[in-house]
Image (cartoon, rainbow, N blue to C red):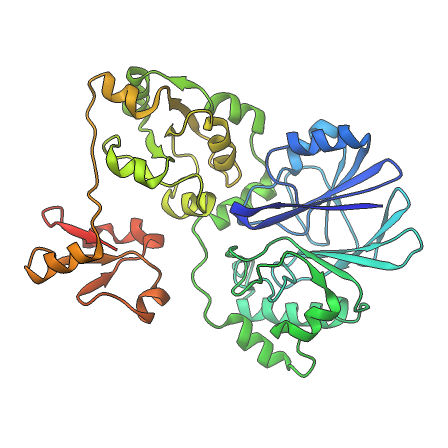
Length: 422
């Protein structure tokens, strides 16, 4: 038996590869398929199933492309309605992979179709649970992402989640390993641990949501309190995962195309393409193409793209470090942004050499800001952090202007004013 967690830090996401006797299953795969195909080829294994724990909202899963390329069966839990062919399991059903058995535990709450897959080893002993967004390390899945399904409310879903945890997961032995779909940094929960797996026994002792003396009403209150609005792209990604999407190969072929400065400018003008600059922030502030937006590829790239670019079909052209264009296109596609139309060959240096206009952003120290403020030259200070960060401590006279919601708040700004952004 081989169980491997494939963790992607920028999405705080865990996919899983499980193999036995030449057969394999992949759980909650990311959009790009080649790493999984390479893994299968290296191990000499045949992919039998692709398990999806639920309709993911924070990324586009790779189930469709992976099924087409391997012939594997896509498997969802009860109640999962899709526009593509898949196998919908029954609660308690068992599926064989090599000498292993997976038992389906329908665990609604995060979403109605959320399902936990219990792995039984060769001897039939409970070994691990793949919980998706039902149970995290230190937390549980937020119950508000699917509340628009019919008349279901987040309180209804929270109640279902309480029942699922108490009836399906907590009765399992303490030695069972917990493998969730996400860790700290994901917006699918409120207070996840930085650890990416644990034993169920330790979670029963330390996870607030698994307290033995917790009532249903207390649980509903705790898991629904303090929820921030979900990122705008979540519902759109969930719909893609239900209804389908284009081939990742076509997205990469179209997006990772080198464009000369003239061709780049023409695409911007003719297609209404957004210029996305993914270099390091120090490089961006020195010189950038006017009207470009900056989201650094080495930070929390995908979540910020989802927060700042409202339209998944927005045409995008890239300014990126040499040799990283395909990586950027891939990471855009992970969250459903498939309309990348190329990247600037030679970068900003080539743009400047072609005699085209550039822009800059001044970066100053805190001391300089204090001096300007004292002299009356920093009348407008915008604090772009989250509201909770702003409330904990902020500069005098600063206005909270959260970056997460910048698109809906731009009307509040005056183009004639000079703003200092913190």
